[in-house]
Image (cartoon, rainbow, N blue to C red; front, side):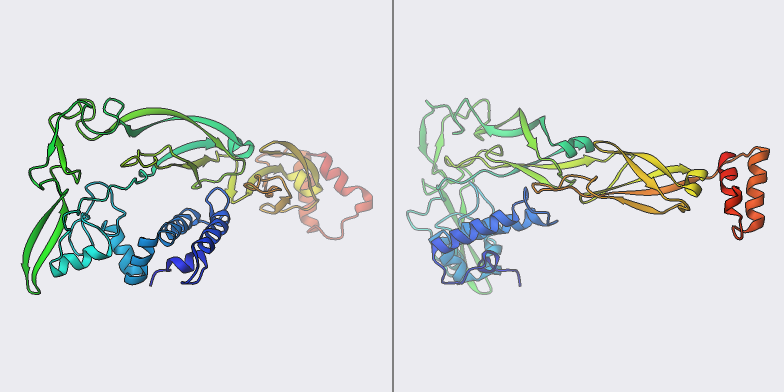
Length: 384
């Protein structure tokens, strides 16, 4: 069984609206995609928003408590809880989203109830759909944080008709198909008996009226597509797959409702030098054979400059060293991750006579019983 809305917000079933609002603010602050590092933060945040939307609406909450979580969410997907758009899909049992909507529609469809004379489609303002897009930045931009400008094509309310779908001076008349009800009814004979279904009128799309003209720019849809150039602030430390939300930059709402939001999924191009794991970075640094044998101080290039790193004597190829605080900034938090440096010892592909003799002497001795005081290692080092 899916997690119910009360559990999502962490409130009891008899919680007041004020308690639900307080719980929503607490959960939203914790799980917002711009703040949370959770992989499923965006999905979790959507559940929190949906839970608040349902439980703070008296009618929706009544339907939710009567139907239960699974049946309510299934009905909502099909538009039978009053959440569908203009001309939306049918209800959970194959009926339409018209009529009073919601819990009553389910029984109306199965037991012959009608929408009644006032059964016009829901005309309440509804927020527009969210739009998604993607944006690629490089590792340095993710490190510093940046402002990026981008262009998208998106639906927007038609300026010619103001989103109405017809010229302002067009003549209106009652829809002949639904007689102004905004709905049409169909009766079907089933093994359970006669079933009446109510659907949104396809002729007027639930408005109850048709017009003598349609808008020449939007073709009656009330919406056109346009290119928009926007700027978004990208915080330092952002990772690939995380999304930024630009409020009210999505699709236009219906019946005077607000626009939806624009969700921007960020892809960070790490490049060839680094590998990234969360806030940590990894690189491979080549060192020469003498550096590995005798130790040395090498320069390591980080995202924001070069630092020195000690390679201790006797370092083996593949050893990993940690440079604390030299990784990526932690998103909206203090501090930085670490940089892990893997050493790759480069073996010389050719030796001169002196180098060969020194290494052969070392090999014959097996690295044991070497007279360090006699300057053997200094002699070996000096040959390279």
